[in-house]
Each structure stands twice: as structure tokens, then as C-alpha cells.
Image (cartoon, rainbow, N blue to C red; front, side):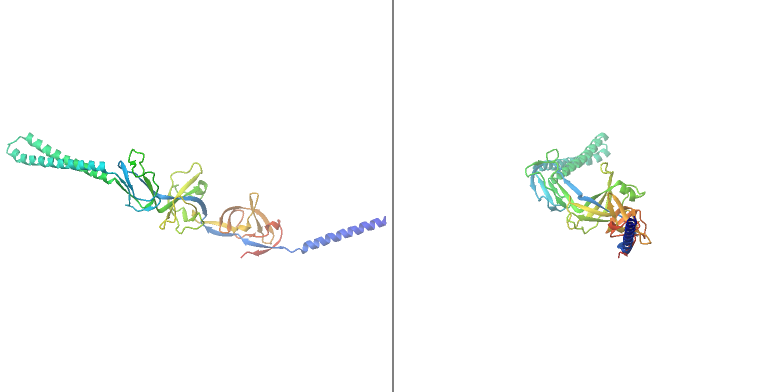
Amino acid sequence: MQRILSIHLLLALLLLSACHHKQKEKRSIPSLEIEVAEAEADSLVMRYEFVTHLKSKHEALIQPRVNGYLLKKSFSAGMPVRRGDLLFVIDANLLNTTLYAAQAQLASAEAQAVEARNNYERAVPLARINAISQTQLDQYTSAYASARSAVQSARQSLESARLEVSYSKIYSPIDGIIAWTEVSVGDYVGPGTQFTTLTTISNTDTLSAEIAIPTSLYMRYAGRRTSYDNRDLLSDIVLTLADGSTYQYKGTYDYTKQSISPTSGTITLVADFPNPENHLKAGEYGRITTGIGSRQRVITVPQLAINRMQGVESVWVVRPDSTVEYRVVKTGETIGDRWIVEEGLSEGEHVTVTGGQKLHNGEKIIPQIRR
């Protein structure tokens, strides 16, 4: 019995010694050196990115005003044209016939007006000496006035005929890129025919891009402004092209579209980009990055400080006694290599940047301030 007690006592001593040894080992483990960074406050204009495509700011439909057979096309599809360049020639033979008839009608009206004037001028002195009646004078006066009106009408008909003839040659109304056309030489074109539109010219001096802003985002920054007074809402409008390059010219606000999209719930603002070297093409896709609203005071931390797991965002906050605290936060947009923290963190607090997977609540660390 005494031997059994001795064995139990020995085992208890060994167990106590092992526990003491483990506690000693635990106390001897040094605190982790963890890189930490300060939560900084900054005044920023929030920037957002939108996918868009470029459009011609102005397109001109080339439509014939007169009917006739097409005699000539004087352009190459897809090439630039200048204002005043000859594009199409329509057969003007029938129009010239109308012009000659109008010229003859004017000559006849002018001859009749001369005769009516002579009759009137002879009748006036005769009426003064009562050689003719007042009724006859009134007839000569009316005939002269009618003849002059006929001359005016004939002149207008002649001018209209000249315009019709001039419409047989179609010139470019603007500078731009001319599109392909279905019409061929010999086709009968004009109002009421198969070819009421011959082609389209797209002006490329300035291209526009639509910025579709979600209504909730717009309301956040628009304040009390009216929904169409957005000239100062956008700032620093930068276009990134499909190849990843940044376009050299910045955009400017143009106007706000009339209605909100019922399908996507967005309000569309239109920005213009100058295109003096014709580097931009209508229909080209790109990304627009722009500031929205005025400056706001925000809290930011390095992106590495934010932990994400199963939709939960969190940080490890370093207390004044160098122990760490797990805290759930809500982030907003990214600014460079930093996250904006909308909720859960105050200016001046420190958060860990590295080693977050090794930490637990209340653990003491050796903070290394990130420079």
C-alpha cells in the first residue's frame, strides 16, 4: 500500500513538473512582430469607373431633294470628307427643262408688264382731260398691277427651278467620316423612291460618351440640385481606351439625358472628348473614370489591412497596450492602394497589415509602424 502511494506521489510530481515546464515555455514565447498602419483621414472627391462607348456628336443624313437618276459618286466610303465636298450628281436634264420653261415664262411676263405700263402711262394724262373715263383708267391701273405681280411670280418660279437644278449636285454639309452607301450609279433616287437617304456623315471633331450612374449613387452626391443641373457634378473625366492606354484629352460635361432608364435604374450624363488627331473612333468602347460630387472627409487604411471571409470585412485593431482586437468594418471604394472604411474605424487608430491569420483577440504583439 505504501509502495502504491509512493508511485502516485511520484506521478503527481512529474505531472506538476511538466505543467510548470509548459507554462515556462509558453511564457518564453516572444510576442509577434506585426506591421501596423494608421487609419488616416483625408478629404477626397470620390472617383468611380463606368464602361461606355463613344458616339459621334453630330451625324448628317444625306438625302436627295429632287428625283432623278444618279450619275456620279465622288467619295470613298469610310474616308474623311470636308464641308463643301461634292458627293453625288443626279441627272438634271428634266430639271433643266423646267428651268428653261421658267425663264421663258419670266420673259413673257416682263413683256406683258411693259405693255401694261405703257398703257397705264398713256391713260393717266387722258383721264386728266376727261378723254377717257375713270373706269377705263382703273382698268389700265389694275392691268399694270396684275402684270407686275405676274413678273414677281415668274421670277419666283425661275428661282425655284434654279434651286431644283442646284439640288442635283449634293455636297457635304459638315466635316466628318462618310459611311458606305447602298446606292449605285444609275439608280433612281429622291423623295418617294427606294433611296430617300443616300449615306451618313459622322462628325469626329468631338465624340461623346454616356456615363450611366445608378440612381442611388447619383442621389448620394447630387444633393438638392435639380436632376438636369449637373454641370459641376463630374470632375477630372478620364478616358481609358480598350488597349489600356489613357486618352490624352480629358472630357467635359455636356448634358443630362431626359429620363431615367426604367430597366437599369440609371441616370445618364453625357461627356464630350475632343478628337483633333482623329485617334478616337465612333463605336469604340472604353472606361471612364470620373470624380462625382464635392470633397468628402473619409477614413482610409491599406488594402492589406482588410480581411474578407464569407462576405464579412474585418480588421485587427491594435489597442494602446499593444493587444489586438477583432473588429467588423464596412468598406467603400478604393483610392490607390487604400480602402475607404465607411463604418467601424476612427481616425488615428492602428490596424495590422500583416500576420492577421495568426492572431486572436487579446493577443499582445510588437507593433512595427509601416512607413
